[in-house]
Length: 381
Image (cartoon, rainbow, N blue to C red; front, top):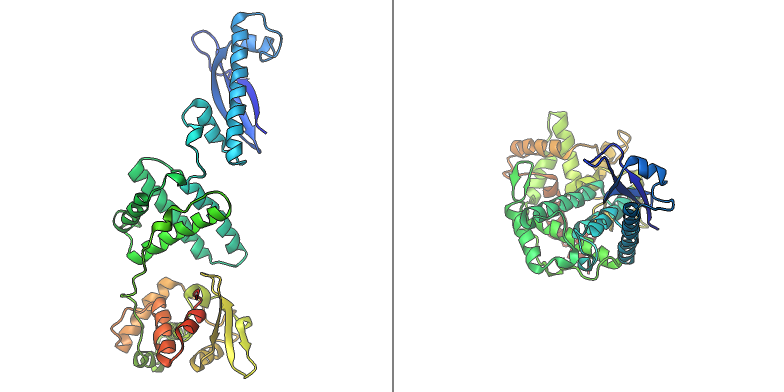
């Protein structure tokens, strides 16, 4: 439980030649110090064994009684906080003792604490290989954005989750879209905003499951992803890239990596981690790529089409994975060159490859939508 030790800061002396008495509060290997508001001479503090001996001087008796009251009040505040959360925050306890916070206003965790708690849980999933490190970075970014919003709009460093209203949620959405700043850019596009808002909703749902909270303030949010900007290649355009031979080795390599994604639907974080261990053969002799998507942790089985099989054979024994590794930045820069050489007037990226798989390669060839969702690692109802 809470331990309180009184000590004197002898390096400080007031006009009455007295030094202040401080209290050190300790709990769970953590400690914090604060002033008691009392002071006594160094000589009397020492001669009375820190006021533990029998006292005769009235002033010292009064100081001792006040320190006893301080300790009693600290224990009372600690017990009240402990009932709410056994992991008592000593900074909050200090605020309670000094009167800078009121215990009856505390109704569960703050929203930032909920995000931090969920991120700790998500970190464990990343460390176990269930989720991708990139997804964890997005959750951390989501927490920073939320903190920026609270600071700029409410002049606070945090807010109780129970205080968050529907107006807070929709003001946050507007803030993310039009006011937030990151890397010298102001505002975030709709799809990214929707994903951030869903992260907040996910974290709050986790808090409910862990009995940290009783409601999810983000349940009112109903924003949707916009698919009007989705770009994909037609079969003729895909054939043009596939049949083109590039004299530059780097473009030739990027071509095959891009085609691999077009014919499998794998996102960059998943495609780069594939190895021969992910290849399985069914009873009919057909090859399949079998894995769990890092982003969603959903099992996804994708057939190895002829083009994919050729690419795997081309790079077999040349590296650990099925395809060479390359950064997204370089990949997208080289894809622009490929589009120019092939006369394709579209902005090619890794995600164009995924959209191409979902439309031209699968739906365009009669594959049912639920099967496409399964292969791409999406939840299906």
